[in-house]
Length: 453
Image (cartoon, rainbow, N blue to C red):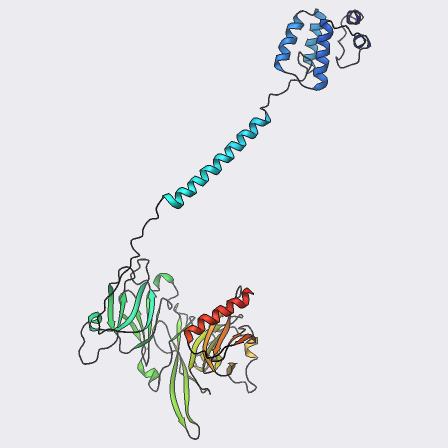
């Protein structure tokens, strides 16, 4: 009754009130009439902010039996953005449980497929066999004598390093005239073991250095041969043909004491140059024989000397060490050498003493103050690095540094000298060290352990 009375009191043409507004007459009536049930459902739908499509169908059937004024209120509600049920039209969304299920399924399928692919690639698919890396054996005969040294270099450009070594064998090098079989340099294919080429050498070799002279890698197809007496020759690695031979007159009064040292390009011909150490004994009254050492710069392109021989008279007893080029942290180049000791001389000093003339090349522009202050009081050109008893010298690169430390091995100890300033880093005492190869391995393990700890 309250509902009917409330409708009757409304004036014609006046908009219906918002169903969410409080109506004392409507709210006071507790009779469960059909109209009250519909209006309560509409109010509950608006307050809760949700509704279903099934409920809207039921309400439509109820609205058909309402008076026209109530239906007009429903139309006005639609114009105000409400549905026929009095609720805002919600968008249908898939249940969250279904989305989680789909995501989990996709993730598990991805993991399973990845595991299957890994297992298939690791175990089921066999690794391709590369037929180029075969095991081979070369029979050289009983009369063959293998002579050091040995060098690995890809001569035939097949991607496999080949082997360069010297033989004393008529089977490998072919018969020779005369009673004495000369040394023979041969190249063995790293792929099959067959002899690619052979050539006779005038003397025994003490060093074979391939691929280090020409600056451009695509043209770097040369090998430098250093003999035990006076031989210094550059040959083509692909054929063994001679490119140049150093004249014997350059070392007429002595011999080549050690393998040639590869230097940077000093004459701007796009080829690295060489440093050769010559050696002979000179006799003096009251002292005896003294070593006479000389440094000779050689052009890597032509094999001709770059100036004259630079002489250094040094004192020392023991094994000849070096020469070897050392690059400091400042970019300066020093030559390390000695007899039972380690001494250094700046390459720029050798270049100046050779009287080549002109300015220093770009590779010799820098000096290292930490090394220069180690010169003796009389301003000698020779720097004393380690005093005596040295049996072996090794350079060890410094981690994250642009220089190397010096690992000095004597008969009683292994010492690491810091290459930056020539100060001793550490030393460990050992007894009866007499094998250089063993010294290398032991010292390197000690050096590594020092930095690991």
